[in-house]
Image (tube, rainbow, N blue to C red; front, side):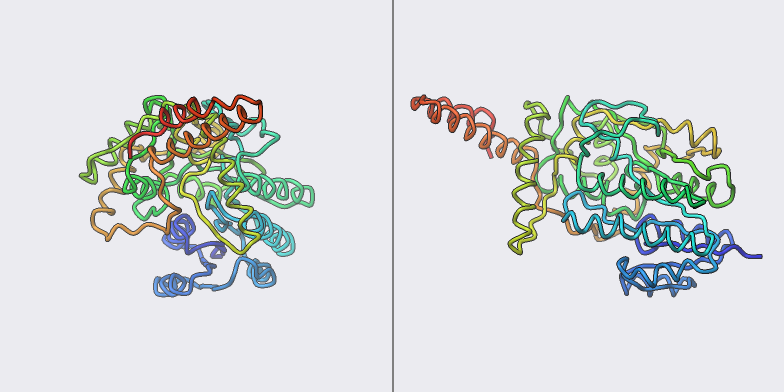
Length: 388
């Protein structure tokens, strides 16, 4: 009997790759997506397609009928969006799929995120048992953790599940990670902390799909969480050098002399101001957030031994090969990237930091009665703001 699999979010980078692999392997695949044009493309590839909003709970729950496995690739992955958007896409959809899987006895394979581990410090070989910080790194990571907790609770009602936490998935069709770095570079330069020597993990789409297939084809991973990466950490600067060499573009970087703690707090203030503007009908977007800049500032690698030992996961595509494959496709295309937030390069980030620090210093001294401090505050701004 042919096994049936429902892929939620099949028009996205990850969902599409998973759906194609399943179809190639002979599974009867139903692909759900929101974008009409992309849904039409999937139909042309021979998929059964459900075009529906992630918020259409009745459609999503009904789609679980007769399915052996439901794979949830849907979600709001932007690092700067409304909190309600994260709750709707990352939490409420999971509630619906849990209900559908319990009702129709399907196994749920869910894509979580290693961002829930982030504490803005160096973190090497982070395991699935890592303590989750009491204060989450972003609204996004909070929503992903809330979704995980819903699944753990549903397991008490005999929900069969597997949770994956892949880090920075890249591939030839990537429009977010490597393409995003190129887009950021176009705005001026890429900020580098600690001489760019921070270690970072990537996950090739082929490696990630192989992990998903292991969870589909066996029950060894049922009831477990798995970190996924290439298992091939690279220094950020070396990764950038490789990327820009592959696309024949000179790399421009800005060394960040200010520690991340200060810049992170500056960005937090900017994020809060932007979020407050949502209530007045504005929808500003940022390219760099505290979380995304934190990826440049601190070591962060995953322990993938659990996936290797339990599932038999064997990442065959190296990070260097991942970059080569992406660059090869990128050079053929018209360089499409997703609509990005306002591009702030390293110099502009330093400028913002200098202005905020100088203004804070000036305000503190004025309120303290030190009215001669304007010159000192101006000097602080000048020192931190590079020439534009």
